[in-house]
Image (cartoon, rainbow, N blue to C red):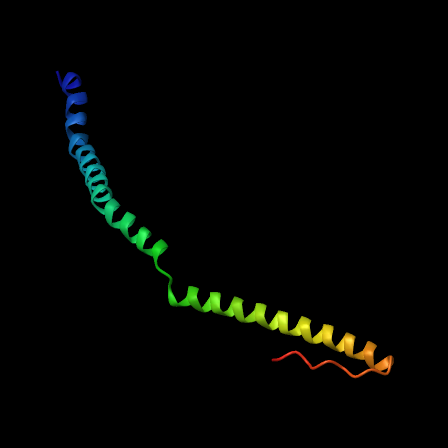
Length: 97
C-alpha cells in the first residue's frame, strides 16, 4: 500500500513549488504587458526630441566643418598669392575669418 501512495505523495510535495513558478511567470508577463505602452511612449519621445548632448554634438560638427572650409579657403588663397607674387602682381584680399 505504501508503494502505491509514494508517487502521489511525491507529486503532492512538488505541486506547491510548481505553482509558485507558474504564478511568478504570469506575474512577469502581466508586468511586461502593463509597462509596454510606457516604454513605447518614452521611446517615441526620445526619437522626437533632441537632448542637450545631441545638440552639442551637432553644433560641434557644424563648427568643425566651418573651420575646415575656412582652412581650405586660406590655403587656396596662400597658393594663389604665392603664384601672383612670383609673377609680380599683388595678392587678392585674404578670405574673411
